[in-house]
Length: 286
Image 1 (cartoon, rainbow, N blue to C red):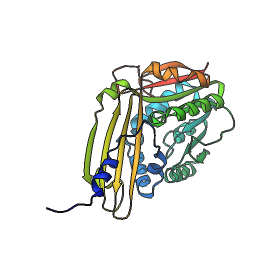
Image 2: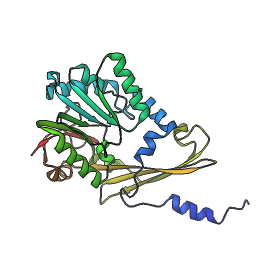
Image 3: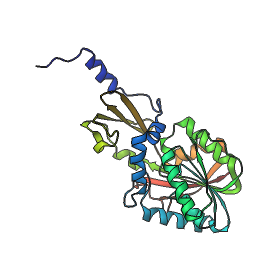
Image 4: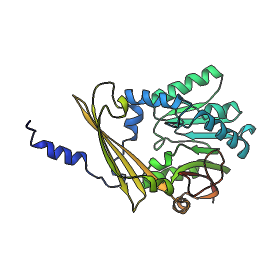
């Protein structure tokens, strides 16, 4: 029987540790790593799937709904948080809106800027963590889509909502989507171990991947904790998701001077259904 290092048990204990909700934040690592950012951009640009971004069909339906709902062809100012490679910003700019976007993926923004130049669009892109970006001016529409709000800790969400309230014009609106409690009920705790987990997503070199999924019933939070072990390094990526009821989301708004104007099924304007895995809200100033 092969012998193992006495520290192996301790290593496995650390690997399977359950952290406190939002105790560690590693979102930047996922989107800025040379290899994973390339894979994420490929997912963005695959218009047939809902990974990184929604499908092309959904995005076009969403932009059509936003244009009608918020009268965007009338030269309105729009700011897209987490804009990625510009799948929303470019379409909104083509309608005539004055558009800004922020993302901390250099690779995605390089694509977005190149695409805007090719299409003759003037879009104000910022390479930054949107939690830190200082923004001047007021905007008629602020968007945060693809459930980005769910990946933020309570403190981060509070700061984001305060920023939204500060940059929103008097008649402006915020649109964001979140995962619902119906989706939370479908999540289960699990532990998975696999060589080259997720088909080599985490590295171009051979690695061993561990995925621990932890569910926090009291907080309605799920953590997918990835541990990636290569020959010369190891790292952990924490993918947090907060799941919401309409009431829980509503409770977070008053300190930012915001309130819910409309509850929808998604950011393409579908009707709200509490049994669906997501819902969207339109926010306005209180």
